[in-house]
Figure 1 (cartoon, helix red, strand yellow):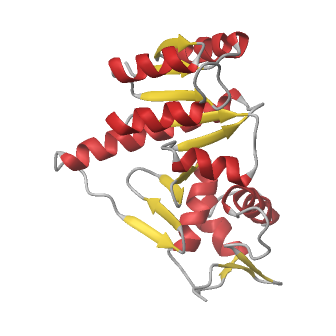
Figure 2 (figure 1 turned 30 degrees about the vertical axis):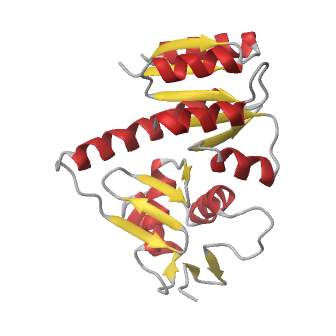
Length: 232
């Protein structure tokens, strides 16, 4: 049973997240301020820490920094502040991931699962059990055996279809892939869906992987044909 620490001063939110995590089979502890949260994080072994940014007594950045001095426990920063500088600061202070309030509980659970999968794969790799095949494109990286997508240090949570579609494009850099080929490969030759579903899923992927404020998408549209990821 994976053990999770929630450090969050909004007690109602903390209790709600606790119930959802316990429903998923996790063991959960809650601390309502930064100082007691830091003590728990250091003295007890947790698999994941969910850490609020704005905390009484000791803020989340300082908690993350001090935890990182002695432990590598994965940290998901939870905050209502969504500026680029806040995200960068959280990651620079040791957070592994970042989720903005208000968030859908399904998204938080997916991020926790992704971190736990990554830990398991890293443990297996350190024991010589599993070798990851990594597909890279610019700052995107796909761990094929683990089915995890990273953009830099950030884990990108994709559905199975989104993952399969992105991986197919990344494995065919500079090759224009028609909508019909993408549909047949990802959805299957016997699929009854229309080819425009590919456009919908490319939009979903772009919303997740493209950086804010940039005009050039990782996935480029070839008008009248399909999509491509170009090396230049």
